[in-house]
Image 1 (cartoon, helix red, strand yellow):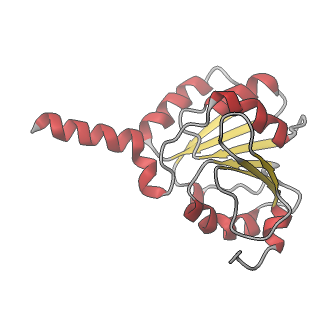
Image 2 (spheres, rainbow, N blue to C red):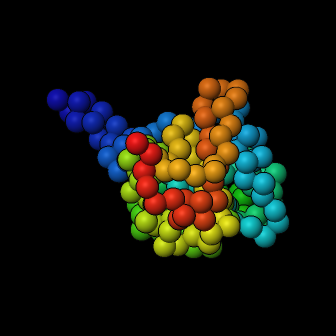
Image 3 (cartoon, rainbow, N blue to C red):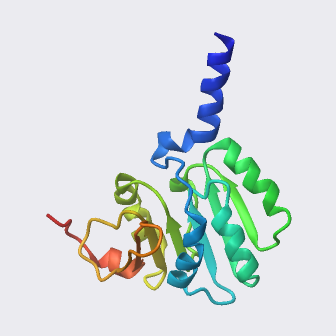
Length: 177
C-alpha cells in the first residue's frame, strides 16, 4: 500500500501540470531549431515558455541567444526543480513556479505553448490583455480555433507548430465552425 501511495505522489509531482491543462509532453529536441526559426529572436527580446517542463527548449535557445531574456513557467514540482537547478548555469534563463495564468507575460516578445486546445482558448483573454499586438505566439500541435493568418509549420517530427502575432489573435473574434 505504501508503494502505491508513493507511486501516486511521484506521478502527481512529475505530471501535476496535467491537472492544469498542461500534460507533460516534451517538445521534441529535433524541433528546437524549428521553433527558434519561427521565433525569429533578436538581442534584447524576451521569450516565454508556458509549461516549460524540464526546460530543454529554454536552454537550447539560451545557448544560441545569450542576449535574449528567456523565461519558463512550470507547475509540476519535479520538472520545475530540475529546470531551476539547470538555470543556475544560464544567466539569461529564469524559471518560475506556478500556474501560467498567474504570471505576467506583458514584456514577452515571443510566447511558446505546448498545451491543450482548451488551455489555448482559456489563455486567449490573457493574450489579449497582456501581450503587445506585435508579440509572437507559437503553439504546438493545435492552433487557436480562430480565423487568423497564422503560419503553420508541419514538417519533420510530425508535430505542427502554429505561429501568430498576438494582434492576429486579438483581432479574431469568431471561432471557426
